[in-house]
Length: 219
Image (cartoon, rainbow, N blue to C red):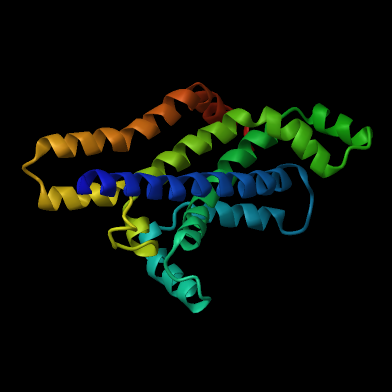
């Protein structure tokens, strides 16, 4: 019973971390990608170069400085801190992927909307977002799977207390304390992979479309 309660709490913790940590970077990256693809402003090329450069920064190098920054501004360890951390780590890939896809959209559609008097926000909301759904779904798959299966970031920004553990943390504890009880580990592993499998198979038809369009046509 104690095990079931601990697993249930860890499942809820993982959902609480994963859903906002997937949605927030998608929203921010969609706005940023549209601006970098279709709006003209000083420093656009430098910002895009900075985004590409951030793709190669190892996550492990930023964990402790970011945690110290969170502590300095009063965030400490908690859900808000881990949401912001996962958002920061996921934004470079999200912006790069979405920018390439959005830049490949037909220019005639965008220009026609501008001629008709549509604002940039109207173009983004009514034209770009619906047409960019394959790219949004592609990144959602990557980000959801990454956050759901994460242990390192959750340990640093959430903690190791029994009520703070995520699914991967529970599995780690079980490997250490109940390594011989394979049926418990198997049940825990099944619960841990069930949700990612549902997400992946639900969105996988958009995955190749989104990646290929962004990679081949983006410039």
